[in-house]
Image 1 (spheres, rainbow, N blue to C red):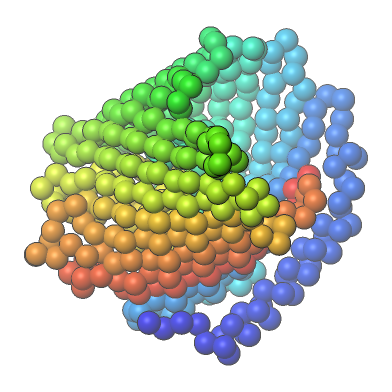
Image 2: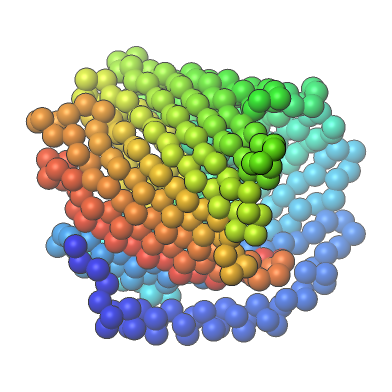
Length: 414
C-alpha cells in the first residue's frame, strides 16, 4: 500500500497553510460582524469553509490535490403571522485545482476525483409557514430525515444537496410527528450539472416511546425522464439509548434496528437490514462510546443492489466513498467504531469490513477500510478538523483499488 511520503506531506502542508492564514485573517477582522448584520426585520448569516483534500489511488490517475473555499451567505426574514422566508447563495472557488470531477466535466480522466466543482448557485430560497404543530416549506431547501440514510444534504461536499418542493411536517402531540413531502427537483452536488427533475413522494411517521423512537416510512422516488426510473422503498426503524443505574450509573446502552424492502422499476426486489449496538462508558470527561454494527444493502440475484440515491452517502460505508453506488451484488458492511472527547474536541475511529451480498465469480471480498476523524470548535464561530480514510481493495473481480484520502479544514460562521 502506498502511503503519502514525507516529501509530499511537506509539499501539501505548504499549499494548505497560506490559504488557511488568509482565512484566519479574514475571520479575525469579521468576528464581531454578527451583531452588525442583524436587523429588526430579519437576520443575515454566513458559513465559510476552506478545505484541503488529497487523494492517492493505486491506478494510472494522477494524485489529486484540491484546495477549495466554500462561501454560503443568506438572509432569514422575521416571522409575521406565522410566515417567514429564506434566501441563500452558495459559492465554491478552486485555489488548488489538481483534481477531477467527471460528472461536472472538470478535467475528466486526469486526476483522482474530488467532487467539489467550482460554481455559484442559489442554495436555498423558500417561504415557510409554521405554528406550534405545523410547518410547511415551499421552494428550494435543505431537507433531511432520520440520520440522512435515505434523505440527506450531503453537507460533507462543498456544494451540498438541496431539493425543490413542498415539505410538510405535522406534530400533533409530543413525541409524534408526520412528514408528507413532494420533491420535483434534486439539486445535486455538482453545481448546476447533473441536477435531476423528479416526482418524489416522501412519507415518514415517527413516534417516541420510553424505549426509543419508532419510525415508519415510504419513499416513492421517480426521475422525470422518458425512461422508467422509479425506486419505491418501504421500511421501519427503531432505536434508542438507555442510561444504566447502580454500579454502571453514568453509562449508557445504545441499540438500533432497521428493515426496508425496495422495488426498482417494477423489476427488481431488494431488502435492507441494519443492526447496531453500543455502549458509552461512565467517564464524562472522555465520553468514550463503542459501537458495533452490521448493515446489508441486499441484491436481487446479483442483478441490482439496494439503492439510496438521496442519502448523504459519504456518511455510510466508509469515507473513501467506494460505495456511493451499491454494487449489483449488494453490500455487507460489518463495522466497529470508537468515539470520544480529547483536547477540547471530538475524535472518531472506525473499521469497516466489506463483502458482497451475492458472490461474483465465486468472490465476495470487497475490502476493508480504516477511518479517523478529529474535529474541534473554537468559540461560537470557528471550527477545524482532520479526517483520514484508508481503503484496501479485496478481490480484483470487483475492480476496486487501494485508496487513501486526507482532509484538513477550517471554518467560520456568523
